[in-house]
Structure formats: C-alpha cells, structure tokens
Image 1 (cartoon, helix red, strand yellow):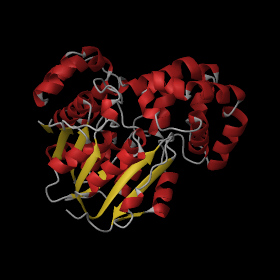
Image 2: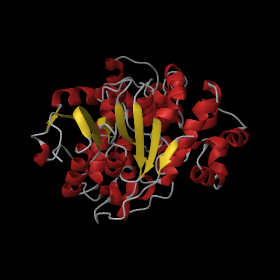
Image 3: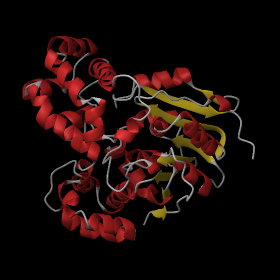
Image 4: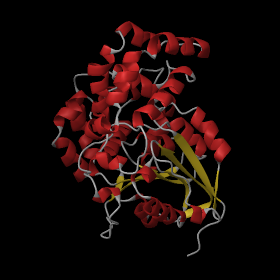
Length: 383
C-alpha cells in the first residue's frame, strides 16, 4: 500500500487557495502538463529525491519511472484517491488490463476489477471509491471537472465548428507545412474563433472547468491566449501523437500513438516496480517539503500553483520549498494565465534557466499554458 501522510497545517494564510475554494471532489482526472518536458527539465534519475504536486498522479508516476524517489502532495483527498487507485492498478494488473481499467480501452468488468484492487488502498481512498462506483464503471480518467468541461466542448461545441471528417483529418500525421495549411484553410474559421472565445472565456472556464478563484490574479483575455497557443500546437507540433489534443478532440487517448508518458508500455514495469518509492502527502506542498525533507530534494514539480495566489504568498511558498532544496535542485512550474517567476528576493540563491525553459516550452504539447519555467538552486537557504 502506498504510504500516505495526512498531517495538515492549522495555520493557513488567508490567501492560500485551500481557504478560498473546495477540495472535496476530483478536479483533474488526468494531469494536463507534459511529463516529457518535466522529466527532462528536472533531470529525474535513479536515487534523486523529488517533490511533486500529485493531481491525478500521472506525472508523479512518470517521475517514479526514472528510478527517483517521489513525494506527491495535494490538498485534495479525492486527488490522492486517484493516485492510489492508479498505483493499485499498476501493481496488480498487467499492462493492457491496467489501460482498460483506467478507461483508456473498453471493458465491462471494471467494478469486478476494483474489488480485486481494493485491498491495496488506504481506508480513506477505499471509502471514496466505494461512494463513487459510477466513476469506476466508466473509467476514472474521464471523471474530473476539467475532463467534463472538455467533454462538453467535444460534444456540444466542436460539432458546430467542424465535421467529424475534419476532426479526423486534424489528427492525421502531417508535415509542418501541411499542418499550417490545414489551420489556415480549414480549422481556423470564424466559427472556431467565435465559439472558442465564448467557451474558453474566464466566465465559462470558471463555471464549468476550473474554479473562479483560480482566476483571481488573471489579467487580460483568457480565450485570446488559448487561441494563440492552440495555433502553435496545431501547426508547429505533431497533432497525431499529442495525447492532450487527442483526448480533447475524441474523448480518449490512442494506443499506442498518443498516450501520456506514464501510460506508455515502455514505462510500465519501471512504475510497477517503483510504487514503494512513492509517498503521498495530504496538505500544502511546502509543508510536505518540511515533513519529508530528509536529505533534501533534488527537484520540484510545482504544476501551476503560483498563479493561484498573490505575489507575496507565492514568495512565501517558494521560500518554504527552497529551505529543503539541495544544491543544483530544480524547480519546474507552468504559467497558464498569470506570469510568475522566481521572486526577486531569491535571485541570489536561484538562477532561472531561461533559454532551456524556452526550448522545453517549444516542445510542450499541453498547449493551454503560456510559459514553462525551470529554476536551479545555486546556493542553499540559510537556516
């Protein structure tokens, strides 16, 4: 059974996101950050100690596959239940049945499979899934709030823009020149621009997709930023092998051509054999760093946590993590709609890997982000 630490800090800053919104249901049934660039950016490898936002567990497992020791933290017990059930599936099922149980491939016996996995769950995770058998029955990767948002887009919006044939053509292998031509002549029509502006507005995303509090510090048009990134992803990056695009356009991944890193066959055995090196923690990530620092951390996967809070709170969180960072440790994080960088006060201890970050971002297939940032520790924090 995966170890879970549920210690919570009683003193929560007023600006902390956990004090401003609910964390009692699955927001993300998948991780919507590209683990391929994350693994490379953190130089994940055997023997390294890594701290990660848990989310649904995808990227924590991708890091685990490198041989690293991983602590995965989340404020949300439902998200940790997602990670636990993934771990149980990897530990107890073969590759193809694991894909089927999670929801990547078809099967009609997920509930029966769950009864075989239940012994490998903590009491908290078992209670959560026992209370939601309908999520098990149709595959747990399809039942986050964010996934339902994309399902609404695929079923109710996209058919008003493009035919099934055009969507299928989008996902065919094409050269860069062919993708650019398809974008200009077929995809980027007036209906696409109009409905994208409506459906991916701050109001609609806050209502159906994320949470209004996640946009507290956002300035400017969200839909304009998504339009620019969609154009890049659909023209400059291969569309046939992009698992995030495939899921949005079709409602699932494609085996074997478009899978997130942790679900690819070549990583299956490494994840299965490494489950005991994963520790789950319920609470803020800076508290997880303090509780599980041991000999310090060599890398941090921080998702996009800094854009949910004010500059001062982001500085406090960043500093809390630095206290438990080893020399040359790397901090990787995304910006979707709020620009965040290493706080000025820490620039004597941290250097921003600007050129490398830009190069990784050019490969980022999770195209709703506007920036990927990697910082490297050059001097540890004084006590």
